[in-house]
Structure formats: C-alpha cells, structure tokens
Amino acid sequence: MVVNRPRRGAAMPILTIRHLTTYHYKRPVAFGEHRMMLRPRDDEDQKVLESGLEITPKPSELSWTRDAFGNHVAIARFARRASALRFKSTIRIDQAPTSFREGDIEDFARTYPFVYGAKVGSKLARFVAPPQPYPPLDAWALSFLRPDGSADTHDLLVNMTRTIHRTFKHGARHEKGVQDPARTLQLMSGSCRDLAVLMIAALRSLGLAARFVSGYLHLGDDDEDELSGGNTHAWVQVYVPGPGWVDFDPSSGKLGNQDLVRVAVACEPRVTIPLQGTWIGAASDHLAMKVAVKVTAERLLAPAWDDESGRQLQR
Image (cartoon, rainbow, N blue to C red; front, side, top):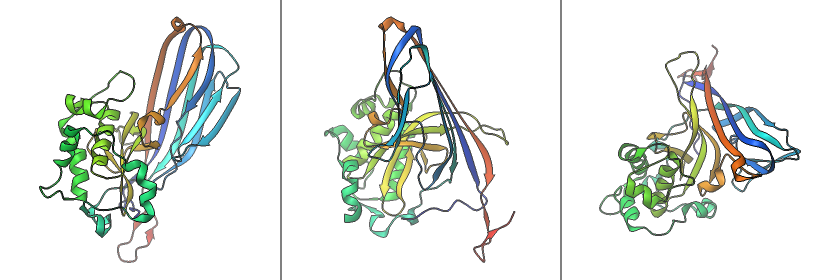
C-alpha cells in the first residue's frame, strides 16, 4: 500500500471537533438505550489525540466497543428520568492530508476494468455487491467509460466525483433516512448522504468497491490564526489497488481527506448514524432536538525535508 507523505512544509492541522446534541421534553421522561458513533476512527492518516464525552444526566452504564467495520461505538443506559438529555463530545485529532495521484495506482489497475487481487477480493466482496438493477443509473455510470467499456481509473473516479458536484444540486433535506439513488438521479439533487449513496451505487454497478463514510467537514475562513466552522458530513471511499481506500466527496468535488474527519465507514448509511436511542413517555412530551457542531483547526507546519539528503530539517 502506498502512503502519501504530506507535502513539504504543508500545513498539518490539529482539528478540534465539538458536537453538542440536546433533547428537550415537557416533563421528566425515562430513557432507553442510546447508541453513539461520535469518536473518529484511528486510521493511517488521522489519529485521535484526546477524546471526551459528557452526558447529562449521567448514565448508569457506559460501554465502548467496535463494530464489524472497526468503528468506535458507545452504548449508554440510564436509570434517571429528566426533562433534558444532553450529549457533548469533544475530540482533538491529528490529520495528515493525503491526495489521489495516478502514479500511486498499481500498474494492473490503472486502466478500468480490472480485477481485485485474491488477497483483498474476499474482504471487499460486501463493498462491491451492487444494489437492485436500475437501468437509468447503470447507463449513467457507463457514460464515464469509453465506447469500448474502458477508462483510465484515475480519470473515472475524478470525473464522477466532480460531475456529481457540478451537475447535481446539493442541499439539506429534512426528511428522515436516505434518498433512493434512483430518486436522486431523477431529481438531480440531494443531501450529502444522498449524493454519496448515488455515487456508491454507480461505482458498484461498475464492479468497484465503494463504502459509505460518515463524519465531520471542516469549513475554513479567512482567519490566519484559527479556522472555524464545520458540520456533520457524508462522502465516499473507493478501494483503489495501491493507495487503498481513497476519499471522494461528491458534494464538494474534492479528492483526498483534506478537511474530512472519518467517524464511521460501512456498506450502507443506516449503521453510521451519530446518535440514536429511545425514550419513554407521551408523544406530546417531546419538544425539540438541537444539534450544534463546531470544527476548529490549529495550523502546524509539517516537517521540512532536505531535497538532497532526504533528511528532516530542524526549524
């Protein structure tokens, strides 16, 4: 696997993510089990430095585990009633920006179609299985290929990502769940989750391994000392022989992991919901749910390297 070294002298951010969710009720209610996916993954290009989770009222039991995809999952159980339930997650993460370069792709996979090697093929099977056939979606995916059914793998992935960003309308959608890819293609619009699911369906119809990613998006501004802003976000990872799992964000048209913090990966989005649980009371007791997310970044200089010796320079 090729690991991309950060560019010499590039800014390497330490990201801080604050995620606050509060549920409000008319009167004290009882709470069932709550499942949280708020702690980012420890991958090669991102490492969690600090992790804090405050829950009010304090749960009677809080346990941590990892699911089948290696995602961190917390389960909280409660003994007390309350008129408000509050979850505050604070994370600091070290991220190494990576890119997607044609030269990193193994020779046999630089031209599509290609076959995944036996060593990884069995592990990728669940990420390749296509959804139910939908001819318009299949035809849309095939439009990125040459008449003979081939394509440069790098160009195929880049073009699909940027075409979705350029031709589909991206915006918030307040209905629950994820829009069916067929519906997204018909409307030519959807939320970040909808566009990610559309791209995954198209890639799988071509036999490429793709998975859903849920996490956070850092939004920069013009402040030179501190960058602020952010929100929960969803995008796609594709397994490319050579670099391995590569991030593609069809909502922004960007390639690589810059400004993206991975929390959970899965075959489908329903298992990556950040916070879900139950409460016991009358339906009219529920008043509101409020969510606030803030992502800030500290600018740090990556190590400088001497071009002749290849050694790290002291600053």
